[in-house]
Length: 97
Image 1 (cartoon, rainbow, N blue to C red):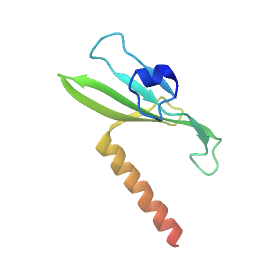
Image 2 (cartoon, rainbow, N blue to C red):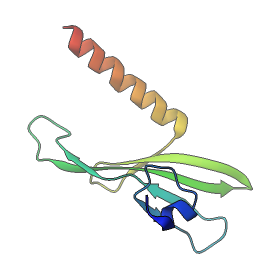
Image 3 (spheres, rainbow, N blue to C red):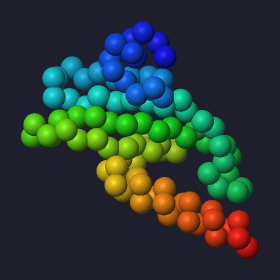
Image 4 (cartoon, helix red, strand yellow):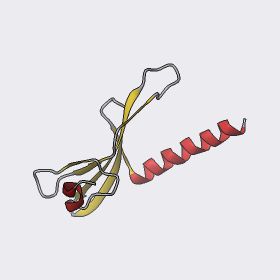
């Protein structure tokens, strides 16, 4: 982890960081991008994950951003957990067959 990331109190997986100009703006923590096929017959795509930390009406708010090379999809932490659970369920079902 770089000294800059450490000084910003980033999570250990943070590779890049975006600091907003305004004090209550969105801080973004970016994980290292991966390249993978997101569909069987598709070309490999860059897959990026990020965490957004900001204040909304004085309350901390964290969201997860999943980017499949199309600009990203922001979801709440609970929505991201539900998506992960659904994916793991389908993977387990596929392995059983």
